[in-house]
Length: 382
Ligand SMILES: *Cc1c(COP(=O)(O)O)cnc(C)c1O
Image (cartoon, rainbow, N blue to C red):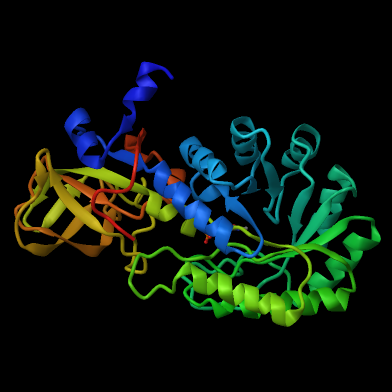
């Protein structure tokens, strides 16, 4: 390891503040938390765990997940496939985007040898077969009912049951292997949504009369932004019970993103100005904090000085991001100590998912200092 890389390893967030004294935002990755989380998924889920790469494609994240036993990756672009493959040559990537460009398909098939492709429309099936041939597994993505989720992923993708039956029959008739995939929606708070979707999938499979290679129950497993989130084990138990009752004998896959990585990263920002109860910090909705919009996701925060925590009673603050856009404000009030002032740091926990991967760089603000911190978090416990 080079000395520069060694310097990017820290013992704690306090250590980051003391050594870097950062007036720029810092994205903190905790590989040990990632590994713990990944192991509980691998041990608890009754099937194979794929990581949904888009959720956080940083190499520290991919490497930690791989170290903990995750070797299958849900990818949606050539860039994601390349990133995973270069870092983890043994990894198995699945091209799970229902709409793929021809150039991307050529590279996926010819350069990376991808054998699993999601489709939700007959024209896409034609396209995939014309480029990748038929020695592949076609995963038909079905739309699932909208449930208790923060983001509905069936509003954009997924075939209705009749269409899915036709796609499965056609893929099988042309000589492809077949599978079914769905996504119940991100941050799904109702474990039963998985049972409902699995029943739907098996009805479709039965009607199509094709043999499935696997049933992919997708992502949507929640992270604990609030206290009313059911534990992961409840999801695993619901899925295992549904498999039993429906007599599903094919392997199950899951594609968690958020639930695997949310807890394992935080964003360390600095207060650059305080105006009354308004704080202006150096990351915001065009950066790593884009998901903190309307109160559905409520990450823990703490305020730090160089020597410890900011003192004082907690009171609500409005937090503005760094860009000149007036939309760049966190909708949620955050409770922080009343003595907080310019130069103090505000750390947002539960920021592993949909954060560094979604930055825009708008106005020249980007969080590009990424550090790894060994061990568990010194304060946030989930
Ligand atoms: C985004 C996505 C996932 C991950 O979803 P989470 O809600 O983060 O678990 C899994 N599969 C597909 C196809 C996705 O698009």
